[in-house]
Length: 109
Image (cartoon, rainbow, N blue to C red; front, side):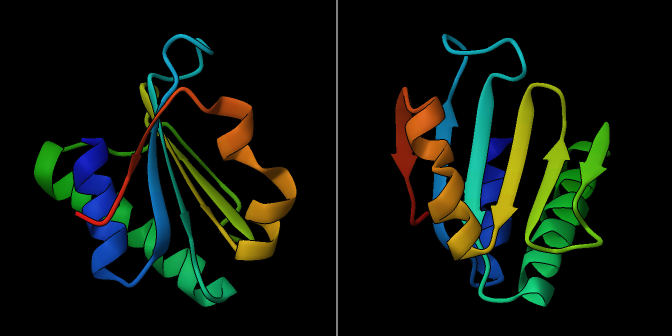
């Protein structure tokens, strides 16, 4: 499922896509997908693309969506999988990769 989400992001020209396996770090989820967009509209488009693709492929809808309004950081919560799509400056500021780093699968697909 994470690979499908990552591919959906890459198909819409998302940048710096990473898959983090975080099972040993948190009970929030098993996997995070992190990606960057080039503008607020791009961040929103990337998140919507993931949402559409996961619904098409797996019949899944996110349990919760956060940040679509401000478009700097959109979070899609699928329970075992959490998607983070951020503006590059927000991603650099919060450094989620460093916080959750265990096993990283650097893309491209």
